[in-house]
Image 1 (tube, rainbow, N blue to C red):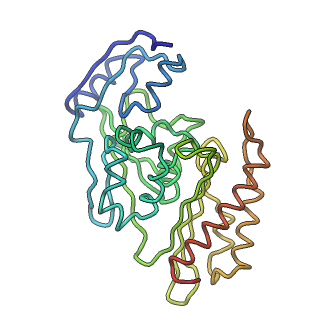
Image 2 (image 1 turned 60 degrees about the horizontal axis):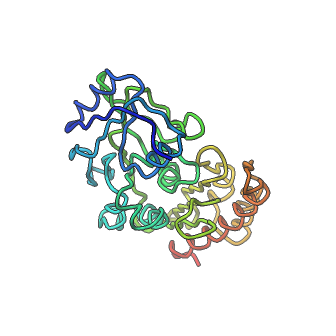
Image 3 (image 1 turned 90 degrees about the vertical axis):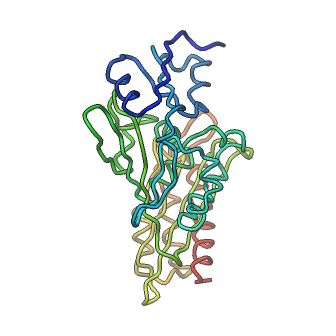
Length: 288
């Protein structure tokens, strides 16, 4: 099929793009287009106008700012993959981005596009949830900050207004010496994950876990922080018995069913993958 008819605008500055979003009804922002173009061709989306932000260089960057690592919304996933800053300060993100589609996909796909598409199986929203990222959205009224936990408004629906545009994301790296792991299960390499798990662990000087993050992707309408599983590990030494308590919580996650995968299968994957990821993270933290 071919895409429905639409108007096309190609701003060269953020201010121009925000002006178009404010003035034009039924507009949709085009970033990497790896999901949107397919949706247009299959007649799943019917925007009156596409605002192509590929010609705005100010939206493409990876930089350190104080204790944060910041990404422009048009930063290509390939740039994330090969960034020295990401490799040294955000190893979990570096590990996850290798699962995003294929090299050709990452050449065009963007950080902001993945976040706004908010596919529940996508890797970048899962990592943003795991690391408590902050999302910056702008309009002609100014810029506001949204915690990643509050960013999903529903299935593939971000909590932004029609005239707002995501402009950047900020992530605070975990301290050196933390353990991390990202695992996902899909039918073929490059397919969307049936389920993924992201784990971060930090031990205190007393040898007890002082900070834990466990996030599941693909299990619900948006990535899910497994708070009960995290609490089961906090202030423990991360022994096999401690891991088993946390994994038991993941096996009981309230998972979705669809045409291809029943809920019980996602629950099974949640437990199995999280157990593997926890053991990898513990080893990287020097505890196994």
